[in-house]
Image 1 (cartoon, rainbow, N blue to C red):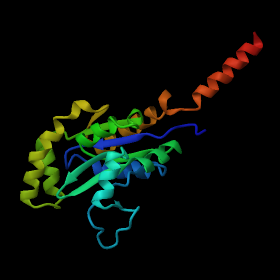
Image 2 (image 1 turned 60 degrees about the vertical axis):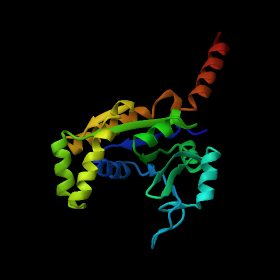
Image 3 (image 1 turned 90 degrees about the vertical axis):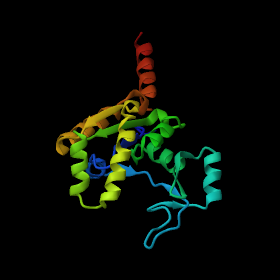
Image 4 (image 1 turned 90 degrees about the horizontal axis):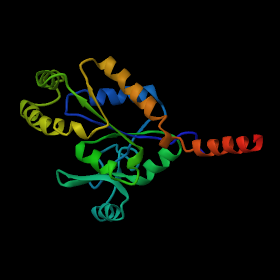
Length: 213
C-alpha cells in the first residue's frame, strides 16, 4: 500500500491574479504533480492528441459519463462540454501523486461534492487590489480592451466565492505566495486521511503492545 494518497489540488482565481504562473512553478517544484487532463466535445485542433491535451469525446459519450458519475466536474462553455474524468484522477492519487485542477468556483464545488472530494484541497488566489488586477491584465498585452473589460466584469463574481475555499492567499508578492502554496501543500499531504498506511502501522503497534503485556 502506498505511504501517501495524492491530493486533488484546486487553484482558482480571477484572471490576472497569477494563478497560471503559480501553477507552473508548482509543477517545476514537484515532478510528481500533474495537471488534470480534461475531456471535451470540441474537435481537436492541429497538433492536439487524444489523452495529451484533452480526452476528445462525442457529445453522447460525454453525457453518458456525466450520467454515470464519471466526471468530477463539468460545464458547458461556448457550445461545447468540458469536464474532468474521475478515472485517471483516482488512479493518480491512489499511486500517491497529486493532481492539479485549474477550475472556477463552480468546478471547485462539484469536485468537493464528488466521491473524491475528501481528498480535495482548494486554494483561492486574490489580487492585492482591483487596480493591480486591471494593470496586470493590461501589461501582459494578450487581450483587447473589450476582452479585458469582460474579464474585469467577471472578476468580482469569482472573487465573491472566496469563502468556499480551504485557503485564500493574497498574491501581492509572487515568490512569497509560491512559498505559502508549497507550505500548504506539504502540510496537507500529511493529513491523516492522506496516509492509508497509518492504520496498519497503529495495528502493528497495538500487537506489539499486547505481546509485551
